[in-house]
Length: 232
Ligand code: C5P
Image 1 (cartoon, rainbow, N blue to C red):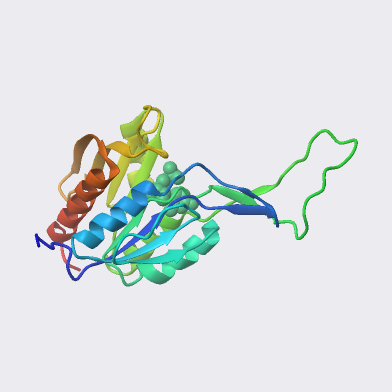
Image 2: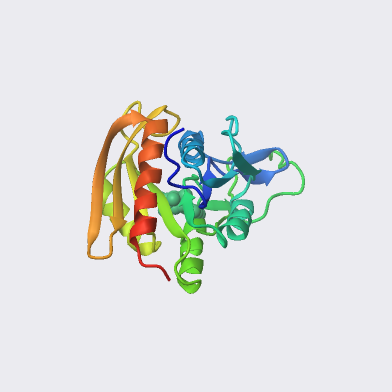
């Protein structure tokens, strides 16, 4: 029972880390657990949305009623996002996408070289997935609403506002990852929500709470932005 305010809406969410191969047995990645993205997917599904979850390699079960696409690299996540986001109402980028990948992944295992103290890797930039979806939205007449995340260790609000602007997001969920027990890998999180509300900039501070509760608050706020903004 209960209210289903997201019924009829399609929500696409990216979650987890990406994994960028160096050779057939090694990769570059990060410590993202995927918990926040999976909590968002569960919350959106509970509120009645159709949910597509695009996940990097994580150790989590798929929430009930969620369609999951597994990817490894940023480029695979980008491709899946472009495919799914064109028809959705709300796109949430919660993945910790690797900023760089190896310029070329070696075809065979990289061997340790005798007599050489170092090894230089050449990295190239990965696509900024959420900024790309926001650009698609601009050319497609206003859909989807695009929500991003910002994990910062200092100057939370300033960096988050800069990302909101630069990536042309509608809303950003900023969290301070320097606080012990919150953020990366943890079960709890706190956040500062910043969004464009048409007349100015809105904001709300969400206190430390389980990721499941925070996820519900984020989805509800995003639904609020969706219904309050002009129809294109
Ligand atoms: O710039 P930064 O990585 O801190 O921005 C975080 C936001 O951008 C998150 O919403 C993240 O999912 C998204 N992002 C992305 N593609 C990238 C880098 C970040 O979608 N290559």
